Image 1 (cartoon, rainbow, N blue to C red):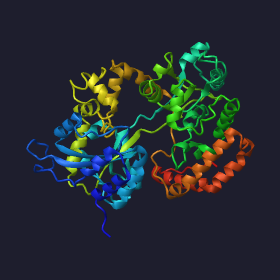
Image 2 (image 1 turned 135 degrees about the vertical axis):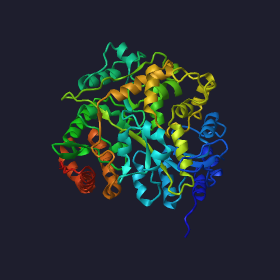
Image 3 (image 1 turned 120 degrees about the vertical axis):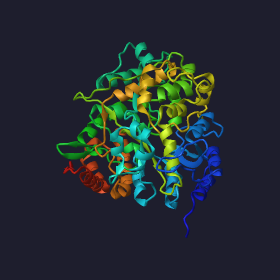
Image 4 (image 1 turned 120 degrees about the horizontal axis):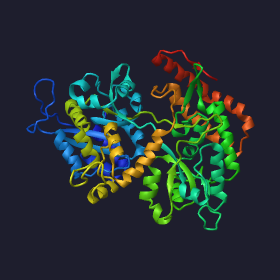
Length: 530
């Protein structure tokens, strides 16, 4: 049977998806034509050369593609390319990209999450960029840190272009106006945190005379709400963020999985105490993210932990919380909540946020790299993130023009902003900005970066067969037992039984496989701390 073409596979995805953007992208998915190139090794970007059509598939990142976007049109002109972009909803991207990968025929560029490329690279899908980066993408090479290139190598070769990530993403946020109303200070340790949650629940912090508030809620997933508590015990579980868990730490040359560690048990005991005190929203384990955010916006929750953008953007800008609760004032907890041993921290999301892979079948790798290289220049990055100067903005350190803000709010201004990173530029903007919206955002991004970030010892280590096959069941069991321990359905006195069952369900085999891979790649000799 012949392999399906990219056009046919993407077209089949269009049948499944009703998204207008995807349909538009599918209708124009024609095979790329090679661009004219000058002689020698340099790509031709001269005005006389016909623009090369290059295709891209990426998660939408909450953005939409607009065919007449003047910013992307200008990018095409500057890089001498014609873009053919397919944007898929974030939660559908991986499954639909799997269909493309199975066909063996993918678009010229694929934006993949962090280390997802490791699942496909040995299938021969991606172009070896080891020599091509130096030859055709000097700006990319210069503007990304050497450790990012090194971290994303596969068997000594460079198959992807890393996108630098801010490792700190989550921020615990508190109703500062409630603290002020109750004459309380920002909590600095677990005892003060518990007292705050009790006051927010039982002391009528909004002064409406009703018993209708809770100290703790969630804004996305329930697990996020408890992240600072785990951090106070020096750990950062990752099982709720993925179906293939194994967040672990190294101690005395032994690797200990967080989900069966003594610190995890201690954190569970503290969380159960909060649950028994009825200071946690009883819907925290069942409510959907959008409903949880609406509950916060209605002024019913005093603390949550979530992505840095929730308080300044989702609640304040999108859900118009200040119109509902005029006196609301959110503040990040800083520098963190300390536990019994003085520890505090948050989960590190790692410094590789995504990667760009180029198809081994691309007809014009020079044009693809020329496009990506232009996006890495100061000019290309600014155009890509802010639009047309004089129309959408006047200075990157000032507020957007009304037209630019409207385009940004409609989510079509910067659809390619997650392709190439320039953290150095963003840091300069953050430090010098006069935009009040950006200043408020900075308060949360700065807080997220300031926490002690707790990394998984296995960060960047490829998934093993055992992880792929056993991981989902182990993750399911971890979540199941977390809920039971916290709600009291299972007493913590059964902890040892939980650990033994965790091992038998595949946790031990999974751990051993990860340690074996870790030792191979790190040339080390660590063992399991179980």
